[in-house]
Image 1 (cartoon, rainbow, N blue to C red):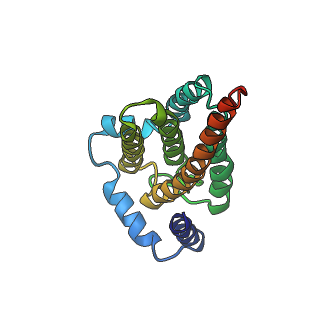
Image 2: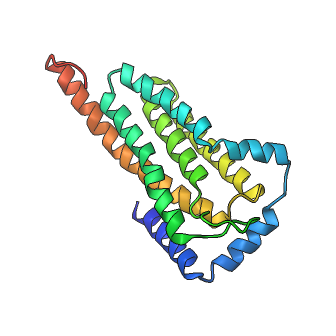
Length: 198
């Protein structure tokens, strides 16, 4: 987790200080913007919309809730709520201009962070209830990667915007993952003692 936070801190510092990484980032972003099939890139970018990603997480939350993992479900909701709580102030503070617009507030990528946390948290919640649990995590990574690719190819975000949100999302998911085993252990011991599940 410390490595992720270090990368996020360095990238944020570069954005705020107009550091030397911004030149290559912007050249790469402008080179990639407009490449590939536009409809497919738009579809990928839309995977990060809250209207698309949050209902996927809601399904995972409901499964966990009705299976008795209520604290896990609440922790996942808290992780999702942390996304706008962190991203919005960062956007206001960094005030970075977008690739193909004069508008600002593009760092970090809210769509990428939303996708990472929504799909990742859903995968963590559903993993105990599926036979091949690794597939839920692979699916979450692929959906987040598709979102990132779409955002860069459509010129909605610079590559560093997306990288920062991968780091931010990964940190939130690692915190969530660290909480889930303890929740499961308490739930098991509570059931053994004849208590109601949490």
